Amino acid sequence: MKAWEVNFDGLPGLTHHYAGLSFGNEASTKHRFRVSNPQLAAKQGLLKMKALADMGFKQAVIPPQERPNVALLRQIGFSGSDEQVVARAAAQAPQLLSAVSSASSMWVANAATVCPSADALDGRVHLTVANLNNKFHRASEAPTTEAILRAIFRNESAFAVHGALPQVVLFGDEGAANHNRLGGEYGAPGLQMFVYGREDGGAHAPRRYPARQTLEASQAVARLNQVNPQQAIFAQQNPQVIDQGVFHNDVIAVSNRQVLFCHEQAFVQQDALLAQLRERVPGFAPVVVPASRVSVDDAVATYLFNSQLLSRPDGSMLLVLPKESQEHAGVWAYLNDMLAMDNPIGELKVFDLRESMSNGGGPACLRLRVVLNEAQLQAVNPSVLMNDTLFATLNDWVDRYYRDRLTQADLADPQLLREGREALDRLTQILGLGAIYPFQQ
Image (cartoon, rainbow, N blue to C red; front, side, top):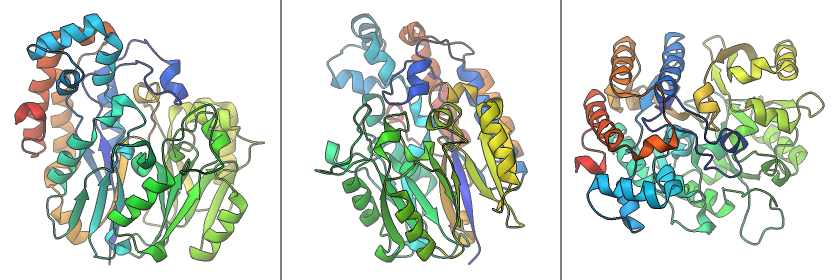
């Protein structure tokens, strides 16, 4: 059956700022306290969405979450009116106000893990919401993420949306950023590769930075998503590269159909893993980047592997890269050499995503891949699908509501809270989502 991989991109929120909240994410900590431009962040994301849609790729949008998260501030002891809660948090614990104002939900590669219907025992598309429990500023996203996904994938005969795993260390789950699917045509059964950083009692673990994804979580997600056990494989990320800033697998590897584009140091026992994939994936074509050409540090700095690998109608692939990869002489030289090699990657496309890159997320972080056949695509909420009208409407919406300059001190402004709620209320109307935010209940 004909099917497509649809990219659902997260839209950066109105409180996009640089707080360095994500220990283990070197871009995030490096740019701490820099002045941000939320308006530019949103427009850079929209430009990428529209450009890919214009090239014929299926593209949709996922809205940001409500921030600051006033309910979470109340949960940790701040009281009064909503404005008073924000003011008291700003005065007593500005770092907590920053955390509950994080716009990190734009990285929807962490929103959920997806199982296409061709891989599921019940023949539906499954999405399991990630709990993101390794970081305080992200651990509260799951309820709203679930509400958003249910508003987009409403048809329960076609889709199954599962809530997040228990919020405990054993089940640390970071979503599709640690998940790859390999195979042939999108609509045919594929092999799902779940990548984990640690397992309970396991011998291999990073020493400097946390391993956010557990084997136990990956196994639980596979069960919830009803992945056919014959179509699943579990692989461990190299703990040494986690300690170099590879906080998710999508910072060191990306897959599309028969291609796995990865660094030579991405996985534990990588040679054995690649041999197993050759046996299980027809036409498997790994593109393994040697450390002698691109170091792990350079891969992290440029987000070379946090790219989108997209299939074109002629069977070749497009690699969507952040501008930082082009600006690094060594990385760009390797990429151009790669084009001449015997592999399906035939073109490079560069986007300026500096606002999100400076906060630790590149092209692949900004999108959730969902394989849909024609009937399933028709069942998706049509208002989120990118087209000329939606692009113009969302740009006008951004111009109206977003600030072009934001610092941590600005988070205490009660007007920012009011602006955000007014903007999101309007956005739910534009995207036909209904009352998905707490303030709308």
